[in-house]
Image (tube, rainbow, N blue to C red; front, top):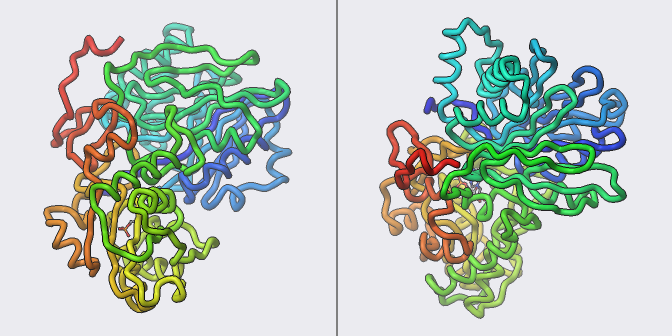
Length: 470
Ligand code: AMP
């Protein structure tokens, strides 16, 4: 994949309501802000498409005055993560006026074969504005709907051509759909608003919670769901024999209060921490989380080790995730800006710090030093994911092998580099057991280098025959 390819680990929302949807989508997107902070947008349909999108947090991009302009009972929304917003049109939802009407799409994931599809469409004479995978999807869908006059069948046909990860929210005029790839790589769930007000599909269950909506179920891998006035109409687009849920959703990406594919993110993290304590005990006085995503892991570690947990690092809650900063310099400053040790907790103590992951090592190096400066006598580091060694091609912003501190390095070399007294990562087996899924049903590409779909130049996790697709 090209190094500068737009990366998409984002949030999507699709809704149909008895009243205007924009406000609901707005709150759902805010609940999903952790999935993307670079750009945001809403598209609604009411006789025509109305779109509001821009760079920044949901609340920077739109306010109450926009809600009035976005009147309409069906709509979709999107939060963008780690986009290179060189062209604001890239911000989603993306939309086109087509021969069959207005189509808008919001996408979480990456279509690995998008360049081939785009090349084919160009050969057929199609003109692209953005050359994005979303634009290509809309064009293919339009052609297929024209030929068949059947939206559901066309969605199935076009999805069969896609290789990669996708959770789509899709508007075809006044019809709204939520679609999940055959492996269920990225999350997507369905809910029902109180008092029969309407129905929602969203990346994570926290979006339902904030609206007081009842969780109905996850969208199945290989399922498209039309959100109708009465609920949900399922369209089978063809599941794979095995799933490939991204383990990193539970380890880091999702909010701890979400439930994904039947597994509470909080409980999963706690179990990972517990398992880590058994696999890699430490002799220490205190267990400390790296807030926020390391919190449940640390709690689990404390339970598993019997060492008490204390909050020894305080986070400036007004600073957003540092990883997303575009340059290494900016990332380093923002770690210091974001986190500060509590001397009273740390001084004179042997501490175990627990985080979800180490990518480049920038965060951990700074934190170990901060803790030593604050008087820690020993610093032991425990990590809730196995070493990240391979790029993610399916939606998490880790596309470059060289960026990983664990690339071709021993654990002891990494320990020296981050400056800790000891370092341990959870094992792959431990992680899989803690998540309580079969290994065959998880995507572990970034820790094994084996992927659930064909990625040019990379190993496939296990061969699947075409008969695998129903
Ligand atoms: P680093 O400083 O590069 O080692 O990044 C590790 C920190 O970033 C950890 O504290 C994680 O919580 C967080 N993190 C890990 N993966 C990602 C990601 N793909 N996007 C944003 N943040 C991440």
